[in-house]
Image (cartoon, rainbow, N blue to C red; front, side, top):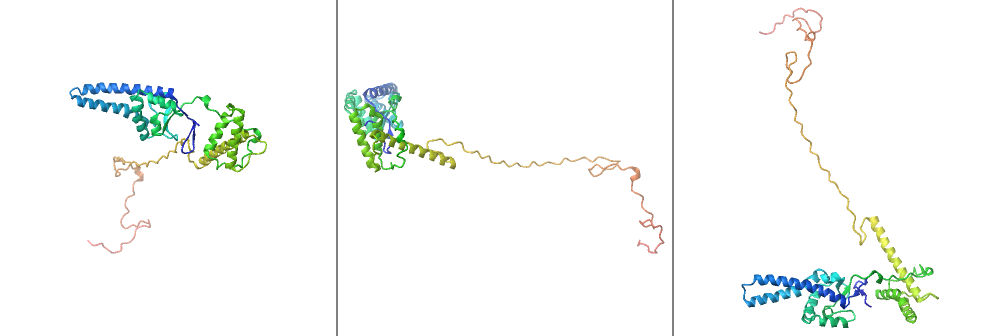
Length: 336
C-alpha cells in the first residue's frame, strides 16, 4: 500500500517519489546552493583579505555549513518540505503519517544529506533509495519522513465504480460507524483496481473484504449478491451519507448566518454611524433707523400717517372725556 493515511484517518492520494524525480530535484537544489555559496565565498574573500589564514579558513568552513547545511534545513522548515527543486518536480517532504515536517525533521535530513549526498557524491543516497520500497534515503529513515509526489496525472485518479441500480439505497439502515478507515481504504483500492486482477484473485479478495465488512456492520451479505457489488453498494451508501451531512450543515449555516466550513465568509453589513449636525448660529443684522415723516422709530420702519390721522388736541380744562359738556367748578384748588 503506497498511499498514505494521516493520523486523522484522512486518505491521501499521494505516491512516494522514486529515484529519478528525487535526483532531478536534488540536482536543482544543489545547483542553486553551489551558486549562492560561490558568490558568497567570493564576497567574503574580498572582505577578509586583510585577515590571517586561520580566520579565513574558519569563515570558509562556517560559510560552507551555513549555506549547504543550514540553507536546506531553513528552506524545508519554512516551506513545509518544498524546496526549489522539489517544487519544480512536484515533490514534497512529509512525515510518515502524511503531516508536514518540522525543524527537527529537516535538521536530521540536512545532517544526513551532508554525508550521503555531499560526502559520497550521492552514491549512498541513491543505493538507499533503490533498496527502499518507498524510495527513502537514510536521512528519511532517521528523520521519519517520506518524499511524495504532489502532482499526479489525472489519468491515475480512478473513481469507484457505481453499484448496480437494484442495490442503490438498499443499505440505507446499515450502521457504518464501526468500520475503520483502513478497511474503507482497502475496499476503495480493491474496487478501483479489481479489473486489473486475475479472476480468481479478484473473487477471493472481494469475499475476504466483504466478510470483514460484515463483521464490522453485523449484517450479512444478502443472498445472491456478489461480493464486488455488495462492496460497491456499501461504499456508495457511505458517500451518499457524507453528501447529505455536508448539505445539512450548509443549510443550518445558511439559516443561522454562520459560514460553512471550507467556504469564505460573505461581506459583513456596513453600519453607518449618524453624524450629529451642529446648528449654525445666525447673527442678526442690525437695521439702520429710517426716517419716516421726519421722525425715527427706534430702528423700525413705521408707516407714514396722514395729516388728518394725527392725534386730536387735548380737551379743554373743565370738560370730561365723555363729551357731556362743561362742568361747574368744584371749588377745589390744587396746591401751589
